[in-house]
Each structure stands twice: as structure tokens, then as C-alpha cells.
Amino acid sequence: MKDLGILKYFLGVRVARSQEGIFLSQRKYILDIISEVGLLGAKPLTGWCYSDWASCPITRRSVSGWIMFLGSSPLSWKTKKQAIIARSSAEAEYCCMAAATCELKWLNGLLKCLGVIHTCPMELLCDS
Image (cartoon, rainbow, N blue to C red):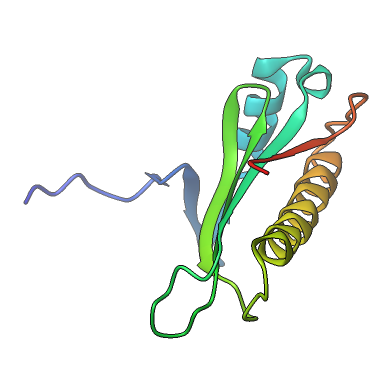
């Protein structure tokens, strides 16, 4: 191990100390990222989703997965067993697409809070 002195930055978070306490700040980095990429709103927000019907041999629950992109950059991804036991592969796919749509809408809202307004429609693609 090596002592690097007083902590100033950790995982992109700025750490500042004063008489009043310790302050954490990440706002500068978010603004830097947004200004660095420029016309972020012109890039499409796209999601790919996949569901594997009844793939768990014990519970017979389906596994869903998705990945969301802003342009060609991945933003979020998830793989999870579905909460229900789907009666068909179509039902498993619809459940997966519903969850992926919620994620797309949440990401769009988050980007809007950061000042990134999309003019392109969101797109959700599925393997079926």
C-alpha cells in the first residue's frame, strides 16, 4: 500500500474538506461530459431486449435482459429472472419489452434533467 495523502478525488467524485465538514461534488463532471459530447440530443436512445422462455429448470421462470444505448455508447444493462411464470415465449417477450420500455423512459427523463433534450424517437428492438 501507498499513502497518497489527503483524499481529493474518488471514482469521479470531488472531495473537499472545510471547518464545516466534508463535501462531495460530482456536478462539474456531469457538466463536463455533457459539454464535451456537444450535440448529445441528436443521438438516438435505443434499447435491445431479449427473453429466454422458462430457462430456469427449477422455477420455470423466464430470464429477461436488455441493454440501452445513447448513439453507440451503452448507458445501462440488466439481466434478471422475471417475477412471473410466463405461459408462452410471446408472454415472456412482452414482459421483457414492458420492463425495457420503462427503462428507456426513465433514461430519457434522466437525460432531460441533465439538460439533454432528444429530438429523435426512442427505439426498442427485440429478437422476436
